[in-house]
Length: 358
Image (cartoon, rainbow, N blue to C red):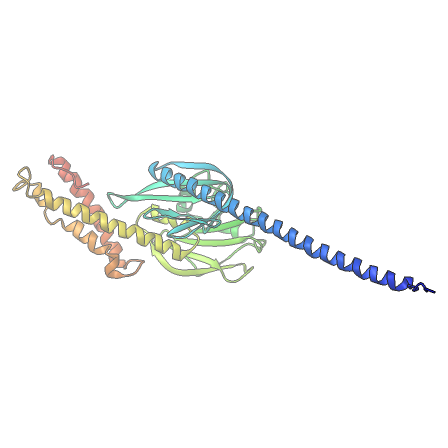
């Protein structure tokens, strides 16, 4: 007689439950793997797209830089996609893409952000054209000029109307009484135009969430000095780095648009290196034409052969010899004297119907 084995329902239910749990765990693991795979693909595609866009924007900006350099004396307001450009002395970066600036001299804040950039180009003449200076900023940077002198008003007027510079220069009384307010700008740069600079300046309250930098423009000694916050959230701006003498306003404008003293020094060092090279070219050219039959023994020859002004200019701007920037006080004095003397020589050459030096 065969007896049927009795199976307990509880054991069957427990086994089925365990198998069901294992199935769900397997499904969850498999789902997580599949989801992770697709997230990886999406992130990889996104990274590739951002890199492609950054590269494209970098090329477009390079075209803008080339075009702006050619059109000297002009101000351009250029719409752009929402972007953030980081500038250094030698390069600029858009996301993962970067471009070398080469021998171009671009004075700009560390970050140029937003949907619009403003460019301004001026020739740098010492006294002949050496190169073009390109200044770049965006409406997200607010420039507040503070000063009571006519020089402060003239400087405000000389800056392009397209930059975010307010309706007028601000008096020190208004600045110290707190009439300058935070207007929601991401960056604010205070420019103190003075003839007796201080070592520090107290800002109005309310700028603790704003990225603030500053600059002293000493119109008496024709020097600039950079200012930074004494600490995070501090209301005091203190000097940073050495004072830099400027002989031409174009160099002073560069300090206004650049917010880092080391980057400014690097750019001006490149500018004076370029001046040294151009002066050497003029010097060699004049020595080549001096013995030509048309000039040898004439009153013109004395201006060309071994031109002392150009020799003095070469010596004053020999960055390799001085190995440092800023230049010495005597070097700046020599450059200023040479500028005047070369202009006078050019005038005399013109009166005597000789070929001009520049």
